[in-house]
Image (cartoon, rainbow, N blue to C red):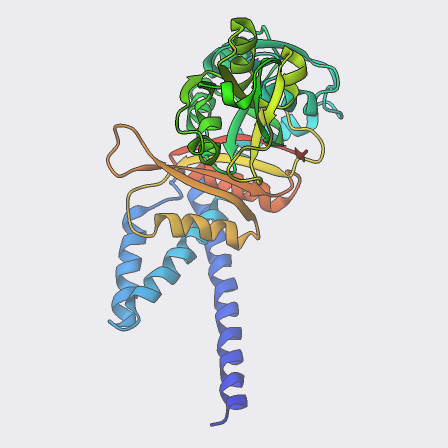
Length: 381
């Protein structure tokens, strides 16, 4: 047979697969209705295990693994169809719908906002990127920012969530889950580290440098060229500049943002000293209340998957099946839980799209450890 004939047979076979798939989904909907009527659970682990073993045996050794993968995906989709065929929303689905409906049409230009650090910190820059006239309260730690919102002292908080070079700020994710906060906005700020000193100081006078640990790591190549300098860690890059100004030391410098020079009466000894010019930090605006403003097309999720082969693949197939793009996928071990991982997901999907709604309903119903962190828009400076 020539290639055209073989392709014709493939097309005919594919058409049969599509017909059988539709037939299977129709039957699945009927099963879902029966289970709802009789109060039966959607997930039947024993039935699915028996089916996978049966199909694997039918396929034979050569095709067993492929057939098991195919039917695993089919059962995932069948389970989702059973869950969604009722047309009823879960508690989370209702909460998201209410937030979309009840949130104000415009993001507030003014608000009381909690930031970690001091005046001149990158968190302040991010805050003023998101709000046109914020009232800012500064706190020493991330935990204090969360506490300020939880107590009602501030409506919002600004926190770094990831850096393009250093990765995610895991402690912020952990606090998000512990305190049940939501992301309502985000922005990306370009980080340009500058070496600052008092006006009378020259580069040859410097013996010590102060900055945040992450900034120090991001400027390691510059610091390596000054091996005689002693490096000290501070809580914040702007705090390092402020401390330098207050100390009056003429043998020290601070790595900070350029705008801290005018703010604290310092001079620039060297600019753009980071290893990589493509250095951005993503900041999130968090709130105790779920707020979803018009145009929200980013969503953040956290979830735990069972420790078994194919669990991540099965999850990713749900995103693929609904045409939803993943912009971030990161994992970290779960403390105290052997070989289990927490996964962070960021997705691109309009909060108004049926695909988004169906995905959230499906994840909420089928995963034990699933956390929805909010839907929002992101600005880039």
